[in-house]
Image 1 (cartoon, one colour):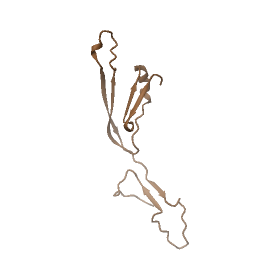
Image 2 (cartoon, rainbow, N blue to C red):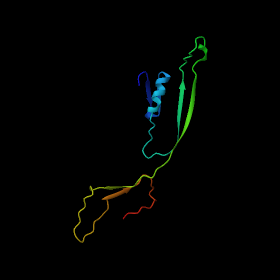
Image 3 (cartoon, helix red, strand yellow):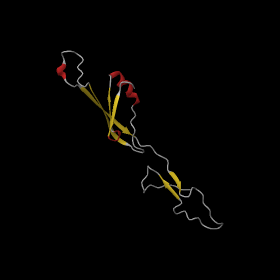
Image 4 (cartoon, rainbow, N blue to C red):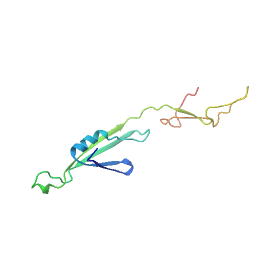
Amino acid sequence: LGGLSTSSFKNGSALMMTGAISVINAAIPEILISLPKDWFGDGLVTIQVNDNGNFGVVGNETSGVLGDKKVIDLHTVSVNDAPSIKFNNFGNFKVMEDMRLDMQGLINIDDVDSSIYDVFELT
């Protein structure tokens, strides 16, 4: 947006916008909070604003920088992701008639939501 200056900090953990109130208000709906893949839990989003000492009224220059701060509690709920099957041989297996197929190292199952103690059904 024209008339808006932005700066971001450390891994996108902060965003600073400088501009006219109308320009900043127009930019706010475009802000996207991105969380790491498969992350869930509680967090905070802190929003601060200040007037950079712009007093607006001649003769009121002694008020200094004024501002406001609000904190949003963010609760991200876990969703059940589907397990995945990975073939380490592109899914192409050959076995001679009446012989066994050794599956060790050929197929791997994974589920980001599970621990090593969870029970799965493989059919």
